Length: 250
Image 1 (cartoon, rainbow, N blue to C red):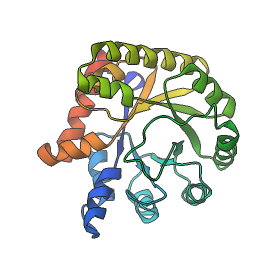
Image 2: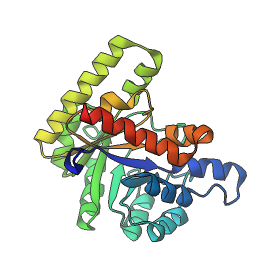
Image 3: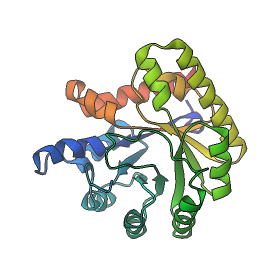
Image 4: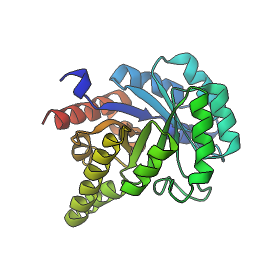
């Protein structure tokens, strides 16, 4: 498969840090996980510094920047504290995401249509600092149109609803959600936006997403870390990479 047709894989290391934080010590080290991911064929590393620091922390981001040459994608809320962290670190990309302290995980896309005025200054400031800006949104044409108007370079489509439908074997919902992602990806590419996708992706759900021709990158974390308990992180990432490549080739 040519590199131009290959779907990139961004590995999210947040939940390695979640396990570390449960005990309060240094192990397991999320930066070490990032290095294993690079060895296994990852194309980038994603991490989300939350307000409550439940996952990675600023020092993890700093160590990661020193340890790897892979592009770093920092997920962050539209909050001044996070903006200052991003401006100090200058990662390859920042993905603006919704965040609520009480949620277990991100529950949906950022409503950039309703929060246009709140989001716009963050997009502008990050762009001026030379950081590539991505917006994590639901696969909705209105959200995509606003993302373009805001000046984002990338939209990352929230795949949670599709992956939940796959897990439930709800075939009507699977068809509906997959059609929405195809439509959204095509609309985004037509507007000049690069298309990424992520949230809840597993071995079972990855192929239909990876086969969407307009999708350039998948960001996957929780499943990889969980599956690694049984098969090892390197083997798990390589298997995900294999399934992605097969889906795109088909």
